[in-house]
Image (cartoon, rainbow, N blue to C red; front, side, top):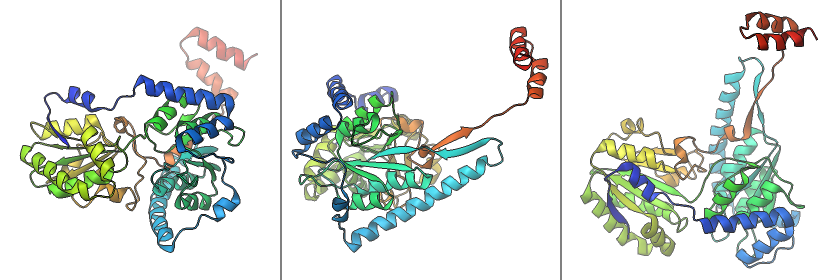
Length: 411
């Protein structure tokens, strides 16, 4: 079950817990990328059959397949609620950004031409990831939006994902894994390449995004889920256990952990997990995730707790402690900070208007979640007059630079 670990040195502790990319995994992904670059659609179809067990005759969804993707009223309303909240926040952000540069001459924001949105699928359904990427791109004004998502065992894409994508006018393709990232990054006959790739994915998707970023822009490394919880003696161990489980169920690569100064609380959380896990729906995945990657870090004091939280910089960080709002001012490393007992990461994933596509692997230290900013380019236009160049040349102290500009004025 979950490990209880004493923190003796923050930097070495962070290094020991960071999930490493194995050379063999990188080699596998590189071979897939090279194959798709060389052989295009045929290579993509080959890997879809290899990994999903289904032969794919047509990679892009047909109009008929889109039409057949029916969902219930309840499912539609759930998608709509999440989409409206996200849209409102992104629209306000875009408006503020555009307004902020209006007073600056010759500077503006323009949407990038095309994006590819990776939406996880296959064994589980993640239509919320379609909302987070596709709708954010649409709010930014991206003209061409492409959605790739791995089909299930029946060779079909989740109908809720299709609903979100088609409502935004996106192209939809049945493909996943590294082969989908390669198709987006290099282009194939069926799928012309995009300018930027966004979205979360598992280990191989993250490696693929990193490798194709040499030629095609990406948003961030948004790999397997990470959830950290800062807790103290006022915290409810059962609530903590449920929050850890809500993220650990995503995959066996998920990293869920607690940081505290209380050994007694750590043991209570451990017991709560042992009690609850057997009864949850995806208990085998949860157990693997918690056992393999989960931990409870015991720190000497609050300062060390905060230092560890900022340096490990998980995707989500919940503050289930006294004076959570005050402490939040010192938490700058995580991708998203959730304040108080009533702000679980599961709610932020769907209903709070925040974007759940967030940086992992410590990159929360340098950027936040996906937003319209990821789909807008800062465009600068500049024009000068001959008289301005003459004035500049008079002020220059370096003769060689002065000569260059003088020659430009008097050719």
